[in-house]
Amino acid sequence: MDQAEQRLDTRLQLYRLEKRPTSTLGDCMFDAISDQLLLHKGITTSAKAVRGAIVQWLRNNAGVHFGGAPLHALLDPGEEWDTYCTTMSNITWGDLICLVAATHLYNTQIVLWSSFPGDQFVSYLSEEEKPHSFLLGYLDDWHYISLGRIGGIVITT
Image (cartoon, rainbow, N blue to C red; front, side):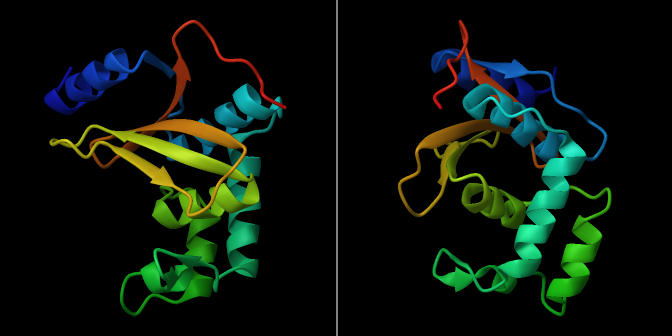
């Protein structure tokens, strides 16, 4: 286990959270969201279906704001929105834009626990109150995981 994973594990133990099995095949973010849909809303769906729904939402909502700017402003300089959405519809890693889309699409807050050094290791991705919180872990800039409360979680819908 490397330092980043050890740091994340320590943080999760402190807050009584545990890792849940998540794919490592390029769909980890979407697989983690799929798992959270099952845990919190009782919805069974695949990572592929979650990816497709998020990309469709993005195609229809490029002007939605996050952090005071439209989502398309978060792209790399010179990248076009349609190109981004097409690339994201295939096997490529999900990103902040996809997480923001998920908060809107699934009407949820996403609480992201990261392995990055320092005191700022929890991020709340939603700019408004939401009825649910999906718990995700983010391991050292390359892997998302689904998290659950130790001892289980009750579906809240």
